[in-house]
Image 1 (tube, rainbow, N blue to C red):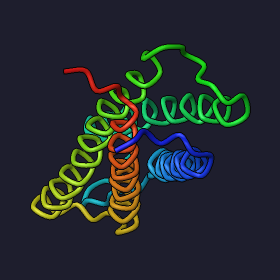
Image 2: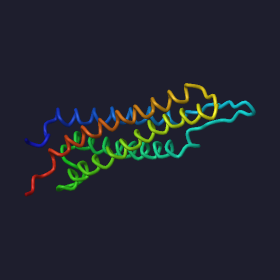
Image 3: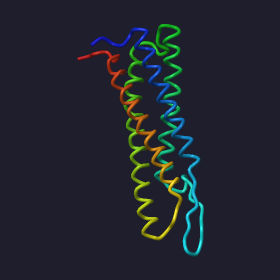
Image 4: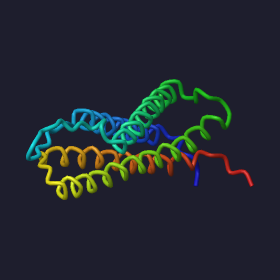
Length: 169
């Protein structure tokens, strides 16, 4: 199969990167604004996303994916406008290919960490009799879901970028 060189395929790739950027941005906002108050019989305390290590990891993967996607959008816009890659030779194609692979797996593990810790927190809080607003869990699930969709977009971009990698046997 020939590498995607048509103007339409470049624009579709750019649109997919922009969609990925939007997903990561919304996920970042939802995660960082996620706080709740937990109630016990004797005390109340505030629960924030950054109190939980898995949510911190989720934030880190989100920020790394966000920065990488922003960089890729800039490279794509340059490629569409100028007609050639910013990085000459095979370097640009290899950066896209390996970068998409690494970032997609980071996003997948970040989403998995978010889903896993939310399930565990809910079970743990229930066992210890802590009452917490359901919106805390719902926001965590929403952020992890958006991160998972961003993983799917990046995985699709990884497949697309694999067609541009030179076939050397």
